[in-house]
Length: 359
Image 1 (cartoon, rainbow, N blue to C red):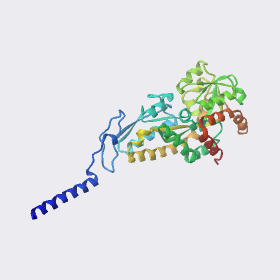
Image 2: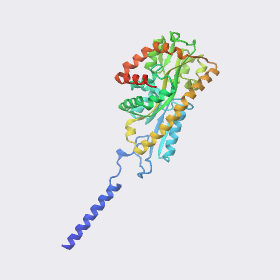
Image 3: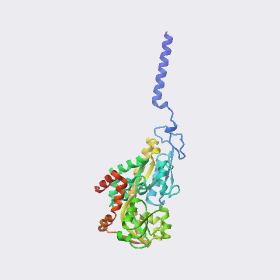
Image 4: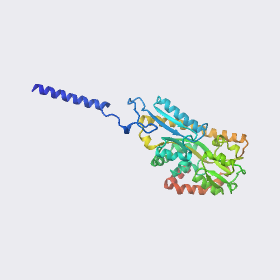
């Protein structure tokens, strides 16, 4: 009997020890489902230590020229993530349209064709209509107000709409204000647009151009130079930063500074991929993106002023719309606001109200 009791006691002790070990992390092995994904989509062996990052390679594509301030910020973001993770979290960057055009980017992000990408709020508005708020003419009269909007309820609502479609917004990169370039005549009032063919970048800018009497033409950013050179179009709307880098001064004579729309570029992540990342990696990406977002916001106003002056120096005739004329430009563009409200529904109405109440 004593022997049986001894064996029973020993067996119970072993079972208890096994339970304790399992509770300390020595039990269940990681499965394929919770392993990080490589760029090819296959699970990689991961470091399990609490102080180490799991290994993952993330592809990031963007279409802007590499020397654009948004591009410089994105490149720095990728570099910092890799450095901070000790090389475990690698961001493989495909710049300047090497992997995807701006027209292909959104679908690639949503389907997981690329894990991470940068594209304009204007192009995202075709997927998330509420994102068109940045194209509503003269909605954001100052750089500071745009920043406040994104850090508050407006940014929260836009992020929710994006996630519902399958994309996590990691960063809003301030591109700066949109202007008008053309090779026909100075544009000093909405009436001057009548009869011109203008490259547009979305439905709301197109509605504005039509309201001004112009004919909008959709095309990718990389196609504009040739179209202006061949007179396929008379003008284009874009930021002066891109106009300098894409050499608009060589193919267009007139620049109108109207600050009609505050353009944002979104660094977005495929939501399913994001949800599969370990919390430690998510925290790293979020914190580094926040640092980068602040830096880019500081650059936007400086770059707008610098590049407008560069275009003047390169020979473009520059007309700056006086602030006193803004109400007339805004009133003439009212059909663009109606277009936004039609596309974005109740959430769009809420966003317009929130924008109007910004101080």
